[in-house]
Image (tube, rainbow, N blue to C red):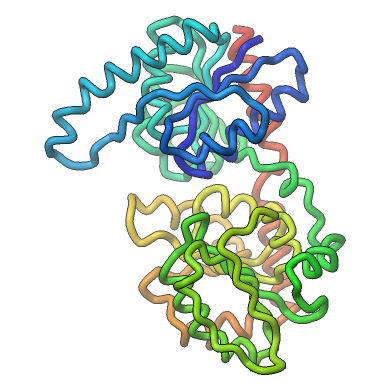
Length: 359
């Protein structure tokens, strides 16, 4: 069986794609995986690293407003649909799986024209334009969060990396803290704004470094842009470790008692699945999907939610520093979060893909 997985651009699309690819090959070793992406996304690096074939087609951004780009859309889309159809002619997939993003629209349209079964997976609580279209072309639609409004939707969860879904934070904590040069005993705050960083988070947390140190809290900060992080160093105080990017996010999650982060779908699901208490800071732009992604965990008591413009050094000092130093409250938050999301969504989605291909 041959499967074409379409998605990329950001980790939000690429990570669940790769997790699903791994599950498919584990269920059936004869499955042949080809991934479809664009030259601009993370998939250019991550897919070959994972050992899968990658086919590239021109990106077709979907304009959100009326303007010159909207007038150019039909020509660009026709060109990319043709390029995608050429890929399908060579690869001859039995099923096409889309994870949203620029590359999914031409994949859905080309698959529909060629009579190839389509599976749609929506990562966010609020669906994007690409998957709203894809869901109208198939009955095989999976969502990461319950209540996502798409035709034929069934809630399967978000496929995440095995290094995360199988993580035992307590058993790995000592190893993880040693890996990052952290004290094995001190309360630990993990900070990340994603692969590109987040200026508001970087500035607010690093400006509160002195207060965190006074509270006996050590910090592991994945900054994206390290020049934005200038923490006050306290002689003899707890470590404040700054990394441009953390490859071993499994160890970072195991090292932490609390995380301050954005609330993209992958982040929310990974953090909740391992029971790590969180402070979610949704992106201040977009269509509000990040706040919706976090809502179930926040309502259950597993996380706090704060608007981007309200995140200040004073708030970190007054709220985060006491929280990360309160083991009883952190334990209650961990318990509230850990049962909210399925850890086997990769296997669930893989079975849906195989069922669609069989039909």
